[in-house]
Length: 260
Image (cartoon, rainbow, N blue to C red; front, side, top):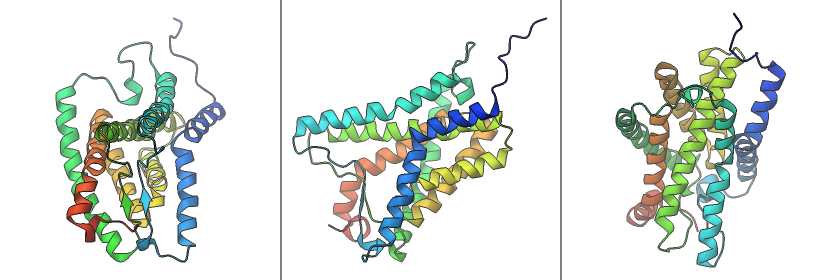
């Protein structure tokens, strides 16, 4: 009987594929982040007096700023589309190799909300501790001017982060590194370090916190094989941070305010 399984992909080709995917997405972000923190650490100004701005304005003209924001979000999701294409299955569930099957949306949503609470509260605490000791860069989570479209764009930006990081770092890399014969904890630790590295521009605190998040997410994924709760949790955390930042900075400027 002839096997219907596809032939094994050569290891060299797998490494080339992984390198291309990362160069188009989070690997490039990690390189820029390492350069960024190196530049910050070699300034005469300490980290605690610098600022990292997320979701910055791209034009002084509101309509064009909106267009640029939406274009940026759309094209940033191209690597997600790429890994979906690469791991798309001819049989159901189509996205099974990425840990996505849409069979338990209710449970996945509840698990995602619970995970967001478990991760989010300690994450804010770690950020504040990092600021107090001076090894975390004050983060301006919304550098956008006040327009009617700012909140929807921030929510889309949070969704972009959740989809990009969890589908690529967890779904795609766990599948491909597994194809290369890596063990469970080798994959968990290496991808957690990658997650921390592309947040390094925010300082050592963000690096350590995101490694811890990566280890937890990876452990959960290897136990349950589901990416959707991780996407939901990540999106919720970023949505709260992005949208709630201005209120927090105005209400508690000594904690959340950033240097101007």
